[in-house]
Length: 146
Image 1 (cartoon, rainbow, N blue to C red):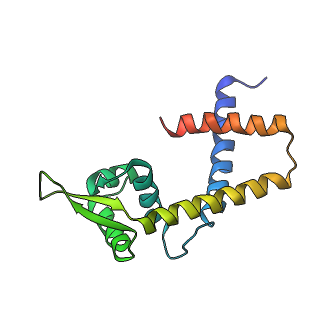
Image 2 (cartoon, rainbow, N blue to C red):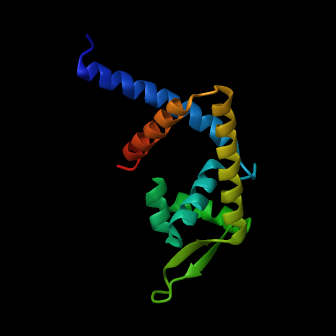
């Protein structure tokens, strides 16, 4: 019989491998090929959370402030974000997504969802299996958001 700890580690290994492979495939699906994964992540974060300071963006993406500043510079140059001065402290600047940035995020999410739905359809999963996948997704989201 498998020890609980062995099951835990085997599950972690299986989830890691499946998640990385799936994420790699989905990252290839994008509306704009010229955006890097890091740039897209910043746009997605701004769309989800609204206007943010560079330092907050850097923390969310787990990069240094200078690295985030370079990412934001590229996004601003392409018209996907704008810098907005803080109303109370002119030394602070916030980053806001533009309509063009929002459109890229929306189109990319739609492409990724469609690609995943197409991949799922190839397997002709039963309704019960699809429910199981949704339940697993909820559990994975819980782990990811800890």
